[in-house]
Length: 415
Image 1: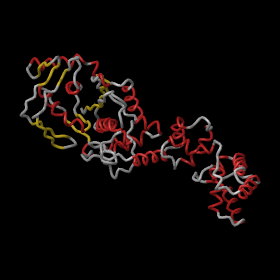
Image 2 (image 1 turned 180 degrees about the vertical axis):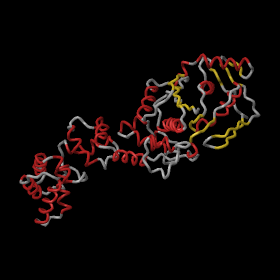
Image 3 (image 1 turned 90 degrees about the vertical axis):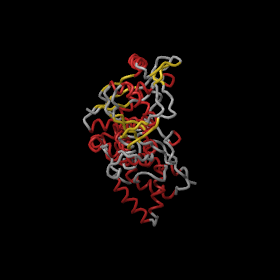
Image 4 (image 1 turned 120 degrees about the horizontal axis):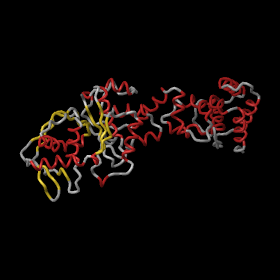
């Protein structure tokens, strides 16, 4: 059976590159009927950040990436690592040095492996220091712990970031010294920023939790991350988890370093919002709707902005004029047009968008007013903005009484 692992270190909240590693391992396991093991690699005690483990689990749960075993914690398995390190000393493959245990490395070797993603890789051992296996404080180094755990947990495929390629020869030597067969290995390409440098915080790299808090949806994030190094058709389709599982193929994960494109993420998130039914979208919107926006108003506003929302966090900025006082730009206002508009509205009994548009177009024609200028002025008076959802649909939602109130208020700004 295929068994893969996601093995983060709790040294901070994982950014989107680390989470892509989790996703690819999860998809590979699910596509092949295998299992995903979750392992927390917490042996570097000096770099641990409190709360990181909880954030890692929170990310996986938010994305619906369930694991089959674990989480195992390396800090709870110290006796195992000591046992295997001492065993290597006893057989002469390792030696003690200043309280630590080091692996003996021959300087004339060439370590070769067929990487599942990068192809054949060859690295010579010349100049390689004897790697520390067990530190003087009794904790293992990453190199020993990862090999022991992957073997004992029967990991069949190690799929990890390209930054570990340089460490792989050490791991192969440890497998060899312990008399174990190495799992198959694949190293994912490096995600780059728009400037072709490795993706970092200066490019706006964030964690999935940051994106969640801004109003990005799991489906958009999963699709976006999947396409960062994997190809399906033209990489423009928003995919469900089921579709990702069905189509994911490690052979289509490419060596070229993908470019992180924020606009692509925005595109997928907007698509996910537009495809969501109203009840589900309202449920997802709740954390982003301010307290002064009545819940019944959300359902009325939503059809006007669903096509325009890029992320759920845009809701307040995009909709606040529906439920808060507005301050129009007086340079756009025309007092005569405001008075006529108020009188027209006061005489209307039918408050539907199509009736409003019909009456206001008739009024503009009768008075020889340019509709573009007149409606822009009316939009400013009612919403305080130059750009909004369709004007008359907006007025219908704002309500007759409130529109009259805003027209009266706008006249106060006119000389």
